[in-house]
Length: 327
Image (cartoon, rainbow, N blue to C red; front, side, top):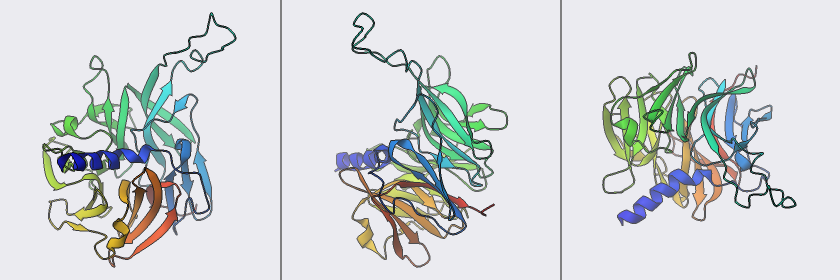
Protein backbone atom coordinates (compact mmCIF):
# COMPACT_ATOMS: atom_id res chain seq x y z
CA UNK A 1 0.00 0.00 0.00
CA UNK A 2 2.73 2.46 0.97
CA UNK A 3 4.68 1.58 -2.18
CA UNK A 4 1.66 2.30 -4.38
CA UNK A 5 1.15 5.62 -2.62
CA UNK A 6 4.77 6.58 -3.24
CA UNK A 7 4.52 5.65 -6.92
CA UNK A 8 1.35 7.73 -7.20
CA UNK A 9 3.09 10.69 -5.58
CA UNK A 10 6.17 10.51 -7.80
CA UNK A 11 4.03 10.04 -10.89
CA UNK A 12 1.96 13.10 -10.06
CA UNK A 13 4.86 15.45 -9.39
CA UNK A 14 6.89 14.22 -12.35
CA UNK A 15 4.28 13.52 -15.00
CA UNK A 16 3.96 17.17 -16.00
CA UNK A 17 7.25 16.88 -17.85
CA UNK A 18 5.98 14.29 -20.31
CA UNK A 19 5.36 15.79 -23.72
CA UNK A 20 1.88 17.11 -24.34
CA UNK A 21 -0.18 15.67 -27.15
CA UNK A 22 -0.29 17.22 -30.60
CA UNK A 23 -2.05 20.58 -30.67
CA UNK A 24 -5.71 20.43 -31.55
CA UNK A 25 -8.56 22.90 -31.55
CA UNK A 26 -9.10 23.96 -27.95
CA UNK A 27 -5.47 23.29 -26.99
CA UNK A 28 -5.45 26.60 -25.09
CA UNK A 29 -8.14 28.98 -23.87
CA UNK A 30 -8.48 32.51 -22.51
CA UNK A 31 -10.21 34.21 -19.58
CA UNK A 32 -11.57 37.77 -19.39
CA UNK A 33 -9.05 40.40 -18.24
CA UNK A 34 -6.47 37.67 -17.75
CA UNK A 35 -3.17 36.36 -19.08
CA UNK A 36 -2.67 32.59 -18.99
CA UNK A 37 0.65 30.76 -19.31
CA UNK A 38 0.57 27.38 -21.07
CA UNK A 39 3.22 24.68 -21.46
CA UNK A 40 3.09 22.98 -24.84
CA UNK A 41 4.92 20.28 -26.73
CA UNK A 42 8.70 20.62 -27.01
CA UNK A 43 8.65 22.87 -23.94
CA UNK A 44 7.02 25.84 -25.70
CA UNK A 45 5.70 28.50 -23.33
CA UNK A 46 2.57 30.18 -24.68
CA UNK A 47 1.03 33.38 -23.33
CA UNK A 48 -2.68 33.72 -24.02
CA UNK A 49 -4.85 36.82 -23.51
CA UNK A 50 -8.40 37.49 -24.78
CA UNK A 51 -6.89 39.32 -27.77
CA UNK A 52 -3.72 37.43 -28.72
CA UNK A 53 -1.43 34.43 -28.31
CA UNK A 54 2.36 34.64 -28.22
CA UNK A 55 5.23 32.20 -27.78
CA UNK A 56 8.16 32.87 -25.45
CA UNK A 57 11.37 32.40 -27.50
CA UNK A 58 13.82 29.57 -26.87
CA UNK A 59 17.53 30.20 -26.27
CA UNK A 60 20.22 28.58 -28.47
CA UNK A 61 21.29 25.07 -27.38
CA UNK A 62 18.47 24.93 -24.81
CA UNK A 63 17.18 21.41 -24.26
CA UNK A 64 13.90 20.28 -22.75
CA UNK A 65 14.50 18.37 -19.51
CA UNK A 66 12.02 17.63 -16.75
CA UNK A 67 12.53 19.24 -13.37
CA UNK A 68 11.47 22.86 -13.42
CA UNK A 69 7.91 24.15 -13.64
CA UNK A 70 7.72 27.47 -15.53
CA UNK A 71 5.99 30.19 -13.50
CA UNK A 72 4.72 33.68 -14.28
CA UNK A 73 5.10 36.60 -11.86
CA UNK A 74 1.93 37.97 -10.19
CA UNK A 75 2.07 41.14 -12.32
CA UNK A 76 2.68 39.17 -15.50
CA UNK A 77 5.94 40.94 -16.39
CA UNK A 78 8.32 37.97 -15.94
CA UNK A 79 8.54 34.22 -16.43
CA UNK A 80 11.01 32.04 -14.53
CA UNK A 81 12.19 28.46 -14.90
CA UNK A 82 15.32 26.35 -14.84
CA UNK A 83 17.08 26.21 -18.21
CA UNK A 84 19.48 23.45 -19.26
CA UNK A 85 21.92 23.94 -22.14
CA UNK A 86 24.27 21.70 -24.10
CA UNK A 87 27.64 23.46 -23.88
CA UNK A 88 29.28 21.34 -26.58
CA UNK A 89 26.33 21.03 -28.96
CA UNK A 90 28.49 21.46 -32.07
CA UNK A 91 31.28 19.17 -30.85
CA UNK A 92 29.02 16.17 -30.32
CA UNK A 93 27.60 16.26 -33.82
CA UNK A 94 28.84 13.15 -35.57
CA UNK A 95 29.66 13.04 -39.29
CA UNK A 96 29.63 9.34 -40.26
CA UNK A 97 31.56 10.12 -43.46
CA UNK A 98 34.62 11.17 -41.42
CA UNK A 99 35.31 8.13 -39.24
CA UNK A 100 38.51 9.55 -37.74
CA UNK A 101 36.64 12.48 -36.22
CA UNK A 102 33.39 10.73 -35.47
CA UNK A 103 32.74 9.62 -31.91
CA UNK A 104 29.84 7.12 -32.11
CA UNK A 105 28.96 7.86 -28.48
CA UNK A 106 29.74 11.54 -27.91
CA UNK A 107 29.46 12.77 -24.32
CA UNK A 108 27.37 15.91 -23.96
CA UNK A 109 28.27 18.56 -21.40
CA UNK A 110 25.34 20.31 -19.72
CA UNK A 111 24.83 23.49 -17.74
CA UNK A 112 21.67 24.50 -15.88
CA UNK A 113 20.81 28.07 -14.87
CA UNK A 114 17.96 29.95 -13.24
CA UNK A 115 16.34 31.65 -16.23
CA UNK A 116 14.14 34.75 -15.99
CA UNK A 117 12.35 36.15 -19.05
CA UNK A 118 11.36 39.85 -19.17
CA UNK A 119 8.14 40.62 -21.06
CA UNK A 120 9.24 44.23 -21.47
CA UNK A 121 12.75 43.51 -22.77
CA UNK A 122 11.72 40.28 -24.51
CA UNK A 123 14.88 38.52 -23.43
CA UNK A 124 16.11 35.87 -20.99
CA UNK A 125 18.59 36.55 -18.21
CA UNK A 126 20.58 33.70 -16.72
CA UNK A 127 21.65 33.31 -13.09
CA UNK A 128 23.98 30.79 -11.45
CA UNK A 129 25.58 27.56 -12.63
CA UNK A 130 23.83 24.45 -11.33
CA UNK A 131 23.65 20.74 -11.94
CA UNK A 132 19.86 21.03 -11.74
CA UNK A 133 17.14 23.56 -10.98
CA UNK A 134 13.83 22.33 -9.62
CA UNK A 135 10.62 24.16 -8.88
CA UNK A 136 10.36 27.95 -8.85
CA UNK A 137 8.09 30.51 -7.14
CA UNK A 138 7.87 34.29 -7.45
CA UNK A 139 7.69 36.57 -4.44
CA UNK A 140 4.32 38.40 -4.48
CA UNK A 141 5.92 41.68 -5.60
CA UNK A 142 7.84 39.82 -8.32
CA UNK A 143 11.27 41.10 -7.24
CA UNK A 144 12.60 37.79 -5.92
CA UNK A 145 12.44 34.15 -6.97
CA UNK A 146 12.58 31.12 -4.68
CA UNK A 147 13.84 27.93 -6.30
CA UNK A 148 15.42 24.56 -5.61
CA UNK A 149 19.02 24.50 -6.85
CA UNK A 150 21.21 21.43 -6.91
CA UNK A 151 24.90 22.03 -7.49
CA UNK A 152 28.44 20.83 -7.04
CA UNK A 153 29.38 20.60 -3.34
CA UNK A 154 32.60 22.44 -4.12
CA UNK A 155 30.60 25.44 -5.31
CA UNK A 156 27.59 25.71 -3.05
CA UNK A 157 25.41 23.96 -0.52
CA UNK A 158 22.32 23.57 -2.69
CA UNK A 159 18.72 23.34 -1.53
CA UNK A 160 16.06 26.05 -1.48
CA UNK A 161 17.46 29.40 -2.55
CA UNK A 162 16.22 32.95 -3.09
CA UNK A 163 17.37 35.03 -6.05
CA UNK A 164 17.13 38.84 -5.76
CA UNK A 165 16.38 39.98 -9.31
CA UNK A 166 17.53 43.52 -8.55
CA UNK A 167 21.02 42.59 -7.39
CA UNK A 168 21.44 39.09 -8.85
CA UNK A 169 22.48 37.79 -5.41
CA UNK A 170 21.43 34.30 -4.30
CA UNK A 171 21.05 33.16 -0.70
CA UNK A 172 20.06 29.80 0.74
CA UNK A 173 16.94 29.59 2.89
CA UNK A 174 17.97 28.52 6.43
CA UNK A 175 16.76 25.47 8.29
CA UNK A 176 16.07 21.80 7.50
CA UNK A 177 13.27 22.62 5.07
CA UNK A 178 15.79 23.88 2.55
CA UNK A 179 17.38 20.46 2.20
CA UNK A 180 14.39 18.16 2.73
CA UNK A 181 11.91 19.84 0.37
CA UNK A 182 11.21 17.68 -2.69
CA UNK A 183 13.10 19.25 -5.57
CA UNK A 184 10.51 19.37 -8.36
CA UNK A 185 7.24 19.53 -6.42
CA UNK A 186 5.40 22.82 -6.72
CA UNK A 187 6.60 25.72 -4.55
CA UNK A 188 4.38 28.62 -3.53
CA UNK A 189 5.05 31.92 -1.76
CA UNK A 190 2.58 33.34 0.79
CA UNK A 191 0.95 36.66 -0.23
CA UNK A 192 2.61 38.46 2.70
CA UNK A 193 6.04 37.28 1.52
CA UNK A 194 6.98 35.67 4.84
CA UNK A 195 6.49 31.97 4.13
CA UNK A 196 7.07 29.35 1.46
CA UNK A 197 4.95 26.22 1.01
CA UNK A 198 6.56 23.04 -0.32
CA UNK A 199 6.53 19.24 -0.16
CA UNK A 200 8.73 16.84 1.79
CA UNK A 201 8.62 13.09 1.39
CA UNK A 202 6.91 11.35 4.29
CA UNK A 203 8.98 9.15 6.59
CA UNK A 204 6.77 6.18 5.73
CA UNK A 205 6.89 6.91 1.98
CA UNK A 206 3.29 7.99 1.75
CA UNK A 207 1.89 10.84 -0.29
CA UNK A 208 4.41 13.34 1.04
CA UNK A 209 3.74 16.17 3.46
CA UNK A 210 2.79 19.80 2.87
CA UNK A 211 5.06 22.09 4.87
CA UNK A 212 5.12 25.83 5.51
CA UNK A 213 8.61 27.31 5.92
CA UNK A 214 9.27 30.56 7.78
CA UNK A 215 11.74 32.35 5.51
CA UNK A 216 13.24 34.39 8.36
CA UNK A 217 14.02 31.49 10.70
CA UNK A 218 13.81 28.38 8.53
CA UNK A 219 11.26 26.86 10.92
CA UNK A 220 9.15 24.23 9.16
CA UNK A 221 5.58 23.23 10.05
CA UNK A 222 3.68 20.28 8.55
CA UNK A 223 0.03 21.13 7.79
CA UNK A 224 -1.27 18.25 5.64
CA UNK A 225 -0.46 15.01 3.83
CA UNK A 226 -0.16 15.57 0.09
CA UNK A 227 1.98 17.25 -2.53
CA UNK A 228 2.43 20.36 -4.73
CA UNK A 229 0.99 23.20 -2.60
CA UNK A 230 -0.37 26.39 -4.16
CA UNK A 231 -1.10 29.41 -1.95
CA UNK A 232 -4.26 31.42 -2.73
CA UNK A 233 -3.83 35.12 -3.64
CA UNK A 234 -5.92 36.04 -0.59
CA UNK A 235 -3.69 33.96 1.69
CA UNK A 236 -6.58 32.09 3.33
CA UNK A 237 -6.14 28.70 1.62
CA UNK A 238 -3.38 26.42 0.34
CA UNK A 239 -4.44 24.03 -2.42
CA UNK A 240 -2.59 20.72 -2.82
CA UNK A 241 -2.91 17.32 -4.45
CA UNK A 242 -3.60 13.81 -3.17
CA UNK A 243 -3.46 11.53 -6.25
CA UNK A 244 -6.84 12.28 -7.95
CA UNK A 245 -8.06 14.83 -5.41
CA UNK A 246 -7.40 18.54 -5.11
CA UNK A 247 -7.61 19.60 -1.49
CA UNK A 248 -7.56 22.99 0.20
CA UNK A 249 -6.45 23.70 3.76
CA UNK A 250 -5.93 26.83 5.84
CA UNK A 251 -2.24 27.75 6.36
CA UNK A 252 -2.53 26.72 10.02
CA UNK A 253 -3.53 23.18 8.98
CA UNK A 254 -7.26 23.42 9.72
CA UNK A 255 -10.35 23.06 7.53
CA UNK A 256 -8.98 20.59 4.94
CA UNK A 257 -11.52 19.55 2.30
CA UNK A 258 -11.75 18.37 -1.29
CA UNK A 259 -12.68 21.02 -3.85
CA UNK A 260 -14.32 18.30 -6.00
CA UNK A 261 -16.53 16.90 -3.26
CA UNK A 262 -19.72 18.19 -4.94
CA UNK A 263 -18.80 16.75 -8.35
CA UNK A 264 -16.64 13.67 -7.62
CA UNK A 265 -17.04 12.40 -11.21
CA UNK A 266 -14.11 14.71 -12.10
CA UNK A 267 -11.75 12.60 -9.97
CA UNK A 268 -11.45 9.87 -12.61
CA UNK A 269 -8.00 11.09 -13.73
CA UNK A 270 -4.78 11.84 -11.85
CA UNK A 271 -4.25 15.40 -10.67
CA UNK A 272 -1.18 16.97 -12.27
CA UNK A 273 0.90 20.02 -11.50
CA UNK A 274 0.75 22.89 -11.09
CA UNK A 275 -2.46 23.83 -9.29
CA UNK A 276 -3.35 27.33 -10.56
CA UNK A 277 -5.39 29.97 -8.69
CA UNK A 278 -7.42 32.70 -10.34
CA UNK A 279 -6.15 36.22 -9.52
CA UNK A 280 -9.16 36.84 -7.26
CA UNK A 281 -8.71 33.55 -5.38
CA UNK A 282 -12.23 32.35 -6.25
CA UNK A 283 -11.41 29.61 -8.78
CA UNK A 284 -8.84 26.92 -9.51
CA UNK A 285 -7.52 25.53 -12.78
CA UNK A 286 -6.48 21.86 -12.53
CA UNK A 287 -4.41 19.81 -14.97
CA UNK A 288 -5.53 16.21 -15.15
CA UNK A 289 -3.80 13.16 -16.60
CA UNK A 290 -4.79 9.67 -17.64
CA UNK A 291 -2.85 6.73 -16.23
CA UNK A 292 -0.76 6.34 -19.38
CA UNK A 293 0.81 9.78 -18.86
CA UNK A 294 -1.49 11.49 -21.34
CA UNK A 295 -2.57 15.06 -20.61
CA UNK A 296 -6.32 14.72 -20.83
CA UNK A 297 -7.84 18.05 -19.79
CA UNK A 298 -7.87 21.29 -17.84
CA UNK A 299 -10.86 21.88 -15.60
CA UNK A 300 -11.98 24.97 -13.67
CA UNK A 301 -13.46 24.69 -10.18
CA UNK A 302 -15.59 27.46 -8.67
CA UNK A 303 -14.85 27.23 -4.94
CA UNK A 304 -18.03 29.01 -3.87
CA UNK A 305 -20.39 26.63 -5.69
CA UNK A 306 -18.24 23.56 -6.30
CA UNK A 307 -19.22 23.68 -9.97
CA UNK A 308 -16.68 22.25 -12.44
CA UNK A 309 -16.21 23.31 -16.07
CA UNK A 310 -13.94 21.63 -18.61
CA UNK A 311 -11.79 24.31 -20.25
CA UNK A 312 -9.73 22.20 -22.68
CA UNK A 313 -9.24 18.60 -23.72
CA UNK A 314 -6.07 16.94 -25.05
CA UNK A 315 -4.42 20.34 -25.05
CA UNK A 316 -1.61 22.19 -23.33
CA UNK A 317 -0.96 22.34 -19.60
CA UNK A 318 -1.88 25.56 -17.84
CA UNK A 319 0.98 26.99 -15.75
CA UNK A 320 -0.23 30.37 -14.48
CA UNK A 321 -3.10 32.86 -14.37
CA UNK A 322 -2.53 36.59 -13.76
CA UNK A 323 -4.50 39.84 -14.31
CA UNK A 324 -4.28 41.50 -17.73
CA UNK A 325 -5.49 45.00 -18.53
CA UNK A 326 -5.03 44.78 -22.29
CA UNK A 327 -2.60 47.67 -22.43
